[in-house]
Length: 163
Image (cartoon, rainbow, N blue to C red; front, top):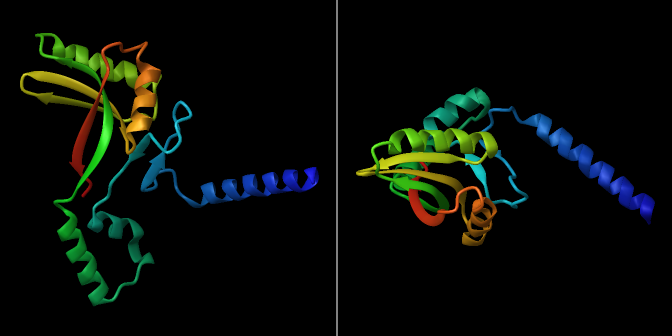
């Protein structure tokens, strides 16, 4: 029985390696597992329909009706918003807020590579928000993991367009 388990593990590992070699490093979706959070932190690179077709080149042959249907679907979904949970690690309106927020972005990116960082200015506040979580429980787990570094963190729910 033990031999079969070892054989199965080796086969799965080799299949995973072969699968990883199929995709280029700059693929459409790069997923990073940070702090052992399963399926919670993902760095997404969204491509428009036109840039995707350019990226694929001649690999996709579509009839005119399929291309027309795809274009119509893209147009219908432009107003569609995706809702995610993020963790706000900085929120201030002091005169040094711009500089401090940039330093926080740089520091966080060094200590937590692969976790998306968003810096925004919403008059009069500079905000730094990190992570992109679909589930609130994953966001809370990440929030608790970084609370020692950033004691004033809190959870926010944000919407954005994917197209």
